[in-house]
Length: 601
View 1 (cartoon, rainbow, N blue to C red):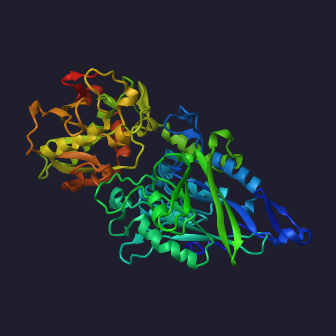
View 2 (view 1 turned 60 degrees about the horizontal axis):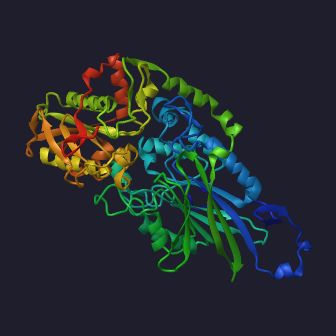
View 3 (view 1 turned 135 degrees about the vertical axis):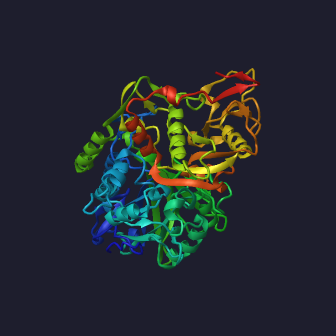
């Protein structure tokens, strides 16, 4: 069965006949050797669906920001080269005809490797290169991949070119053309697995992406695509897939399992809806979960209508884990019926990189290593984000200063030129640093690992106070006399570091002994208390401006200016223009943590 690039029939994962499965391993079995009692036994077949998610441009076990092999506290490894080795092992154990390999999205953004082939040597150029992620995934033999929200970061032309370069379909049943409301990408793919019983198993893979794309990448998709909820689109497509003869339905969903949203009430859909899909839509056998960057080896959700358990699994991001759905089917009343589903994850740090993938993309890797190690300036001191989650650090001030200066320049001579410009920034990584001495592109880029762009929004003093109160929920409430443990002080209620904003240009204290909503004290501008009615310009990234994190007021605030250049690029260009950094130009202590007026640090 040939692959239909529009997703209505996927390539066959099995060809040939005379194959029996024992313990998941294919072995030739002559029909004459089957005993009479075995012939009367129910026909059964087992196969495995492998899954990855949130690869984020990781091919190699390499950190382009630190210029060395990737490592973390748990000694995880990353990258498709490691995944390839695991996939090869599973195919050898189960039999290559008895496996499928899928992905749940966020593929082409995240590392300097993926950035380089989107912006520096773009795949969209005439006679441009083939994206390294397409090369690697084609070589490994992916059967289908769902779209992630970060697929849209570089714009639709880059995404369409990547789609063209892939030998497998990019699926998005809830990515619809804004005018026709028809799928803008294949909604699903269908795969035939040939069994020793003379009856193929038809496996449908339904791809679902994140509705938040409409907010987070508004500039790229507005008027072009819309993204309705996962549950409603699954309810539309799953019965269709069953009526088309699908024996097994797998959902690949770029949506976490928790039922939460970071964009508040700006959309009527839930961001992390995978478990809700399992609960509300009958007919699904398993869901490969993505987006949340968490590890869920196996999670079972009972469907409310049928009572049947749906198995969910989310492998850890960046290729750190590979999910295996082991599926047993039995022939009953003229069709294959799912008898059992189990899930587990394999760890990439247990294997070496596949030398074939390393060889395939060695040149691309070396080009990017050379690019990120270009020297663009110097610094007299080391600046680090290690304490930035609880202290006002110069390295975060650098981001904010660049953003504020960029917006001031853009507004000069206009109607809002006289208004004070403030800026927001987050600590995206606790390991980013600017070294003393030479500064490279990777040093500057490491401060801003996301493809966010810059906007200017009009805010009042009262709105900024509420904005800061919302941001301060990041801290765990800590009584005045209690010991302060920085390892437990932040990320209250699961708030990630990137959803804590420091605002530059104001001075204020955050009283962590107080309840959420009553923590911002001594809010001042220019030495005077902030007037609630006063107007300010906030330099803000497009993720936040479009509702990411559900911060109050900013998404509905008047947009005064926006551009399409990544903030990361703006920082690199600013450092390059300065040549030598002077922290006195941008560093200040604008905020601090206190308890009843006493500084915590």
